Length: 284
Image (cartoon, helix red, strand yellow):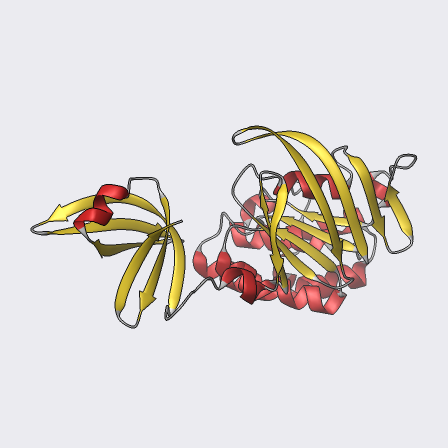
């Protein structure tokens, strides 16, 4: 069991805010941290890793990682960290990047086989694609068999096909190594596919905490689907109004009434739902 009870003053998207999180995570869980930019997700990961200071307590099993008297160093926390920017050593080959963490050739070979990188082990990072570099970064994070694997939007820079492929590999590695994984993500499909638990932060506080299904499937009444998106434009075409909405990596058109068009505005975050074949739109 991991118990995190920390507080830290931050400069959030709307000014100063208190990051105050009291969270218990079971060994082997895959937890997704969701919420708008500036809500405190990445800072929480960095505090857990020991990269930033905070007040409060962090306890992992019977070990105190942080309290009023103790603050374990990053190296002693048994953390694996996967960043957005890969953070590989440019002058080292793939296999050398892994062995730099732990001189365990058998484990390195096993990880490269699982991620289909064994034929690239002697290549330098600069000669690899983004997806290949991210796989190397993931393998390197697992080289010390970490108690906790932390991932900060690790797949955000990849195309949809590669994201889906790496999501499957992350899930395979998570299950094989039985690592407790905490991942920051903005992608609902990614969270639903990987996480058994989703924790939503807003202004430094937990506002939702539950299974991926309970948190992410936000339908009501007779709605069949419900998606959150941003209004890019509202146009009048002949006698009807059409809202152009960005949902994930897609752009959709939704017909709205004249009254709805007056009350909606560009950059507004809305929820788009469908009832049978008739889409509806409502303010978030």
